[in-house]
Length: 413
Ligand SMILES: C=CC1=C(C)c2cc3[nH]c(cc4nc(cc5[nH]c(cc1n2)c(C)c5CCC(=O)O)C(CCC(=O)O)=C4C)c(C)c3C=C
Ligand SMILES: [Fe+2]
Image (cartoon, rainbow, N blue to C red; front, top):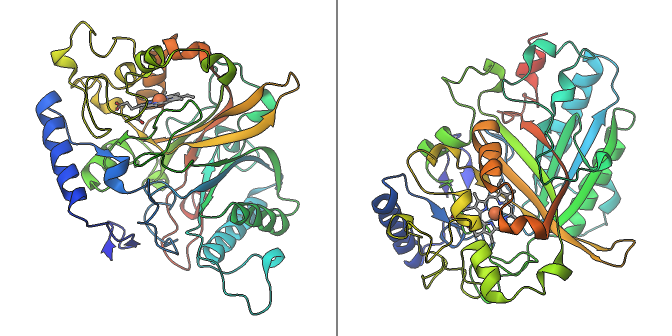
């Protein structure tokens, strides 16, 4: 087992020689192409196989689990409002959420699931708690203690946000290797926090299997999550992901991260009428292999400096706008950890498929919103509609068995 900066055990690295080569090749090419720090690909991290996940993901640490944890296969995202009436009620809620998360992550079965003599199923469960800007109103005396960049998610120009699917005092991201594990956790949380929490919205989501290999595909048929910052580089994580001094954030927030959730619906009926070569130009990648246009493998890196007029990868391709790979745009990169959703048909008989886009970063304005602005009115925009989500701040990790979520924040008041 390796140990991360928090001293926690992490998943064993798949060491089949290929990984080392990919890391090295991607790193050198990336640095050569843009003069920038190296990036890791999904295949590099082994998230496509899920093989690198331990049965139990350690709960204690400087940062919460479920962010740099390799992606589990299933996820539930939910926004809640806090019903507690005062600071004491909020502390009780945070202590309860800590206790249940600690116990469930350790593999103890929720009560509704306990069957005599049954061995617990390893679920690689992570429960990640975020707080929304609305928690910092005058109910709990927190108004002077809000993380510097936390605000309610604004509506961007292409958005059609549905109020019933947005925001919340708290967010929960529950991830595990089995879909029922997510539901059991939600039932457990509902029971244990009875009277203290009211659900606002929820989205169940999952990763599709890799077809035929490499990064999994979303329902637009393209491999997604290929390129991300390198979660194994402490330097990169402290520069892009974790709230790290000097940053002007309150002390209690150090080690946390900003979570941007976006429920984005795909208009698959319209998308499916688009010829594949046009779809490829819209994303800037080959549909079959996931390689950048002109490349062979998904791990190949695009070289925009050798294609200044967009003859190979159009200037308005999704990947080119999202990450132009210049020194100037380097610090707008952030970690994507998204999942697919499938909500059946809508009332018009159209398929309700999409993405729960989850992004983690140090500053949502510098990172997510900057990238989103570059993507404004991109060719992909006519095939997708953001309908919900929210901005949240993932609290620092629970350090040890005596600690609890938000302890440093609530000690301030
Ligand atoms: C504001 C940020 C982003 C939104 C919103 C977004 C929506 C979105 N993306 C896809 C599909 C793909 N995205 C891909 C890459 C990619 N996307 C973003 C950002 C947003 N995407 C970034 C930063 C990147 C990485 C670009 C790079 O570094 O080269 C890809 C390519 C594969 C990959 O690298 O993951 C796909 C495919 C959809 C369908 C979507 C909205 C529903
Ligand atoms: Fe994207």
